[in-house]
Length: 164
Image (cartoon, rainbow, N blue to C red):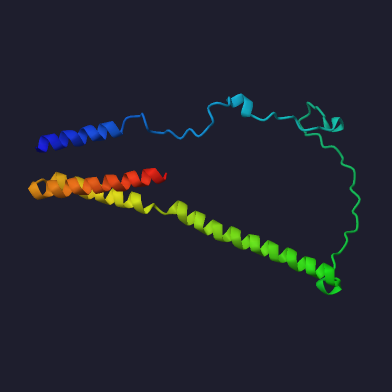
């Protein structure tokens, strides 16, 4: 009986380690060829006056024309705004705060979801480990406990796979 269980366990380990189902993360649409989905890149426009070739060891530096500094307009303070401008400012501030709050809320949940292991896969691992240990210990009672624990572990694993 022990040889049969060990041989089935070895057969299951070999069957699960086959490359048939490993690394199947290909989410690309196979009906659309790769070259069709690729975007065409155009070169950036270059000013021909800036193209300079030189064989000297010292790099050539072009003199850039001085940029005229324009006087910046100062925004009005809240006290200087009229009633309509104040109302518009308040609504814009509320909308910005609302989006920041939602992004923060979604960000926290997303990071927790990615860092945390799913409950079903945890239970599958626990019951699977208990089942294998019980089968290794051997004995009439441990065979029954190990078999039941493995079945429960497989149920949780299948439940997790269905949700993925």
